[in-house]
Length: 459
Length: 110
Ligand SMILES: [Zn+2]
Image 1 (cartoon, rainbow over the protein chains, first blue to last red):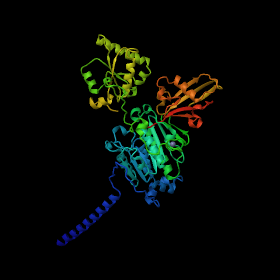
Image 2: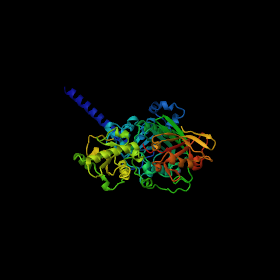
Image 3: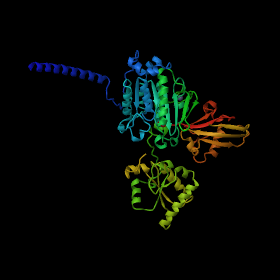
Image 4: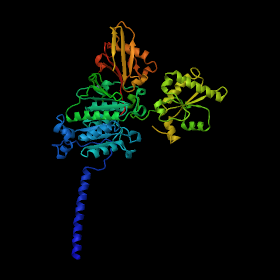
């Protein structure tokens, strides 16, 4: 019996030793390959990527189908593994781009995004899942990429690219991909790439269309060569206002991956000085020959005036985000809050509620009893719509009796278009239609959904 | 996509004016291609004159979204026969038989 006991004790001791050894080995491995990715909230210096001397057997198996391509081959694969790529924006373009670069065996991926995952992102930002809502997009994307290929080094940056950090960040990468969603960031990324001498693979998408160009590459033009002056802010439509079919940025992000892989592997990109346009409606690509690098370009020209990064938000007159812009066209007494409007409804005060959103949005949701006349119809003074409006005003006047200016409350999604509509209606009041009192409902239907009726859909 | 047919040399043009990308077509009531007839002209039309004509005939409402001064507003790229108009002389380019003119507004979404 005692013999059995001592044998068991010895065995137990041995196994405990073995467990301890395994634990320390695991700890060491985890130190060099952390299983939990560290989210960076600032730019820190990176160690240079070490070139691989040769492909491992595992590499050969994993990449075998692309190694067979003479265009890539072993040398191309080795080149990919020593290339670092910074992806600015982990949204509809950045997700598929990161996915294909990681799958192809890129060496290092910097994944930058200041935003968190929201439900309305998931239809196009395909690296993020339902369980990632509220998580930093950069981290969510990095974790997804790592599940796909753990040999790719991922560095998630949860920060806004800015004049202060862009140069330091971009100089640490070989290729930059612009997957951002706003004009100031596009100029910022361009200038930082020109000042650092990095190729910029840029794409964009909206509604049913996409565009792609490689800038600052092989003597070709930069973004400023093409667009020396930023567009007036009121002409810029973002995805949250204009909408986008998810697969469209998906296609453009894959296109970016293709160009990055060609540059990184050494084949080179053919999209310098070229604009690729994709029309998803007609399923058609068009390739446009662009102007060459411009001698008078402000940043890449012969005597540049932009020699360091500037203030891009003031240059563009817009914020570096695609979150909705807040227009302020009206005075305080021309506007009411959603709470004010609720009490008007509760008291059953006579009024007309005018919804100026386009029909496609009214189909998604609307407040009962509202009259829909899109802003564009007001702008164009569409006859049938103006008539309809006048009829409703006349009805109101009858109900109200006496000499009065019937109150009209104007609403839209976020409270921007409604302000424009108020301005137009005030011009029309007393001339093109009977005299009315027009007021804007601040913040629109989204404010109504947030503050008054949580059951009202948000989009 | 976009065709300019010269009916009678230097006098009379019928053309499809295509406005694609970035919602430029929204400016023109959602119509991507326009079939229009340019009035007779003793000299060939140049782009500068074409812009004035578009502004006066197709875009009465909000021209500021399309033009600025005597050119297109920043953020619109003009293509002449699938090439950047900068390569073709920009405003001074003289329209020719079978030319394609396309206006593109840059996209910024991602
Ligand atoms: Zn340039």
